[in-house]
Image 1 (cartoon, rainbow over the protein chains, first blue to last red):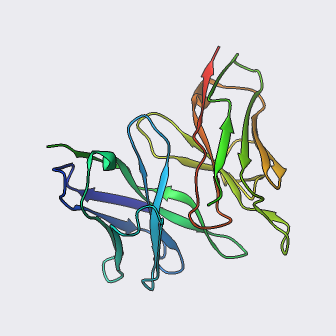
Image 2: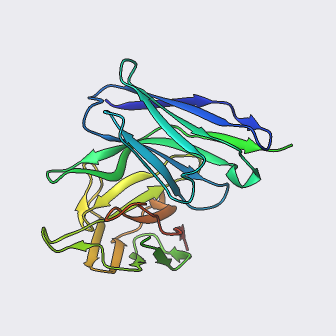
Length: 122
Length: 113
């Protein structure tokens, strides 16, 4: 059974850097998109970006200048860094695994981490 | 970007009745070379991550009850819950994965009348 377990600091001050890590247990790490999605309190879902097991990244243009996603295949982990945070970055952050279909690896997600609430406040 | 618009924002349905959620994309998510609609539906209950229900617009994820069905093509899609059960109370999101960024709709809250 695939499980994603995530952790990181939950309270940041404006201008600090958000850092979260997601560990993958069970199943293969190879071949999938490993993504980060966030959800501001009471609002909808925003795709942040993803990384393949080989380290190829794709980011949401709206966040691209501040986002770095990295992978450590030796530990089956991937990480998110978001610089210069503001109150607008307050959200629950989820890590997730993309789906491999008969056609390709797709950016839809069937395994999710438990979510980490990150609050940005002075 | 392909923007996803859901309607209604919320709906209340009696137990055992049908619930219908609509989703419209700002441009077609039908890939003509394989005739696949790159559209997924998720269910999110309070305090939980989203759960994938349907992909390719109409393919149920493994383990999803058959009272959930998806339909539509091109730019207009529908999620139908044929007979609402108490455990179906949730927010439902559509998502396109035709292009990057894979955007989500704003969500539809389904409640019991």
